[in-house]
Image (cartoon, rainbow, N blue to C red; front, side):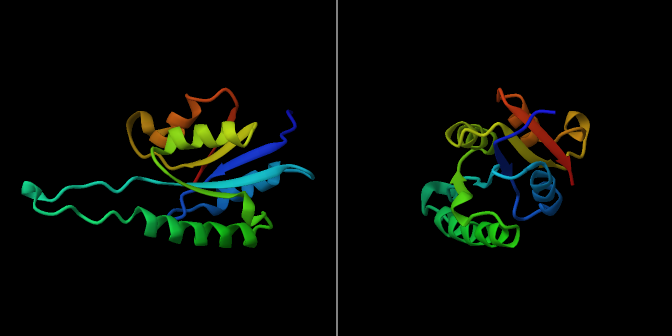
Length: 140
């Protein structure tokens, strides 16, 4: 079995993330860097007739997510400096973070419910098909 040096754990802080984090920590041995990432989907919408632009809550959501992710890191013995909250398309941002952090494994939760997505889920599927490193999809 391959020995990993840097694991990127993609979590949905509004879903059941504990099995995902636990699986990553179980795979991480001494000296393995574990990073947590949460991707905020950009909030863009326009009022009908162009009279008002709806407030962009991305900054507020990011701040809440950062706090929640740092709490998770502390709870699981992960350095709070290894938490990352970014705005964008989930798969693209996870790919970029994995490259930037030199991760050699991505751990992601999946709870796909229908059709092709039944096996992996759309985000997990997109992450798996866009990287050259190992991806572990954890059923939640």
